[in-house]
Length: 386
Image (cartoon, rainbow, N blue to C red; front, side):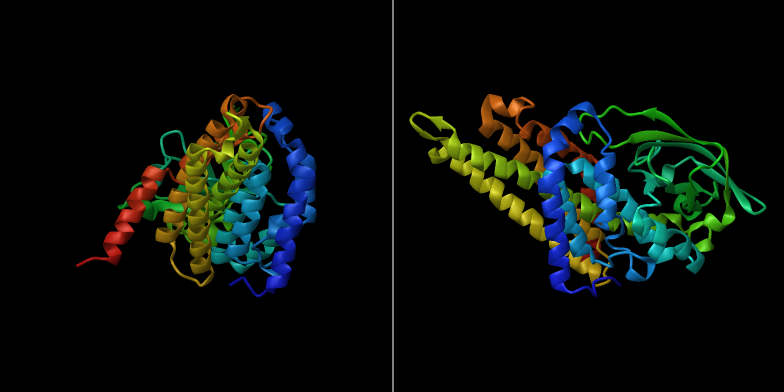
């Protein structure tokens, strides 16, 4: 388990990320978002900072950080521009399941390159007819000698164009009952004949990062790329990865909400109405009090889920709670920040307009909040069963 790095080193890394965001990300964020520009230069700097290897063990060239430190890094990145956190979000999800479930050969093949950013990871789970209902995926992988032949389509894939290694969820047994027993995870590397990018999705927010459709037409992949070397284990593997994914989404939500709050509280102390700064009006103070309190609670929930994850616990309950509360808080806070700014909050000259557009991704992504509530309820009923 990661986490052997000293607190001083962890603080130094978080501070380096904070300075990187202040110096290099914030000045270009609005332009890159508005023009939907992929931040190639920022990606190269993130490689140099080691951000592609945050949680990858040091023996594979990574930083060997714990989940709690990863969450702090994602928060800092998202305060500047949430899209840059997305570039390493699903990358680390792939890294986590390879580290946990991969064979020794697979770990040595992929993790060193991932830690340097030479291999860029992504998750290919969602399909046009299967999002929250993971067991309903239709993409198939049929064994043919030393290869699998993949056919199907994946949708809403982050890093789909710039990624080079994909954790692809497939059905290796189409008649398994229950269906999840027939799901496997195969790592598809680029280039692979028959594996192409389909449509590019033009999004309301989360811009500057590629989100695409992936098409697999008789794509042949070595059988050695079956994660863990055993069919039918993919559902459990991806559920484990999504625990970390939901923590990093919660951290992103805390980051965006914090940026919106800080913009709002600064503006409220400068904007004068009825002869005084609007921060002196009770209506604004009530908004600021609720915003600050909810952000603090969201940060604590996220930190608690990360801590429990680092201790080796199952955290689908805690990660679900953190993701649910932090993302809903982000949605509320960004709207309130816009309202505090008044008309100025609705124009692109001020960043709160972008924060408001970024917030829905965290509510929808990594499992919709409606699904999070069901997961939370089921786990609570297990925990308090009578």
